[in-house]
Length: 290
Length: 283
Image (cartoon, rainbow over all chains, first blue to last red):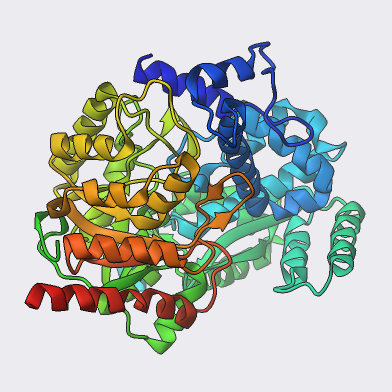
């Protein structure tokens, strides 16, 4: 058997979903006998059959990728509960196995996948999508590039009609339907370094799930950013969000500010001072690059 | 060998794997440690705290890169994005050599994130060696391949694992990262004499040695890197050092990670064997 064919066959078995009892399936969902594949490819030994030896890799694969996804999306897990999150994770990872050399990207397709597989959101689609967007943004903000921030001297005399300020590559802007930032921060604060007992752990879990269930819709404009390489969430006014989004999309400074106040209810006479204060604040956090 | 072309003629001592739970201790206490091994993939990123920590470590310590997803043994082509990012990191760390595993783990662009065992065939050796050469030529740094622990063997294999290792490194003209814990784990899972493996490796190609702990189950042993090194593995290490001399040695501890001092103390036990090897060489 050629190397490529052998590896394709083993990978197919290794990545086949486990049975409900977390064992290797005797028959794959395609109807192919995995027992026969194992027997044909893997040598048995005195203690383990061919099937059992291949099963070690099948189980390790699933435990590894499921753990990685659960680590990356604790907020989504709290919203869905352990059982429904597990069902979602297994289905997602079956449809979207990792295509990156790093496990960091394992959840990169989760938002688009859930939009097509809404039954896994347990009736809370918008809330689940908000949390996925926030948790993925946090991952991206954590290790994305930063560039030297723009200085006041570099901007002296710049024409707002021509000036295009960019945002730091690590900044993410999210418009959310639920205050999932509060929920995620609460979950992180609640996450104990060492839990005294299983009962305590169960109480913590129930607390998280009930907090998620109580979450009411409200529009939130959020930036996920870094200060000294620590990730922070910062809520924005609707107008702030619109200006920053426009800048991120390549609009000139002038057009971004105009876009920011489209449909705004802020009194016209106070807008200039708002803009000045916002820019001072954003600049103090080194958000702009040229 | 103490210093050879596969470890860029360096003479590193005993190091440990750089792991997140130890960052604060290392950065604030600045403990003595001969060198750190980093998992390349954790730092093949564009920015943020991991690279900030790495730069601080590089200011004070010697660092060697160790990869987990190059998959020299995969039949598919090398991932160019992976290589490009790896080269950026190599320039940052100036690693004297770069290691990854003699295994496969990806098919048709899908990654298992596992170190899957090779079928020990001449075709596999040829493909693997070709990829090792490609990586070396692209990265312009000595490449060292590590033997993995395994739980399965293939009907198609045409040679033993150590014969396969030798076939690959001779064809690729690369170095060996000899993991004596992996040899022990595989020897128990496949019922061979681990000393035969150690005695069969070309000593002149050994650039580095790994030691680690593992977990024993009823029917097999799993390479978990979550325990101290057991005596039979130290004995294998002793034998390896007798053969290859005072070689850069690294303790891996990846799960249930204890304090820095505990990990470092465990690694330092290797010095007893290294000292006796140096003494023997001097006599």
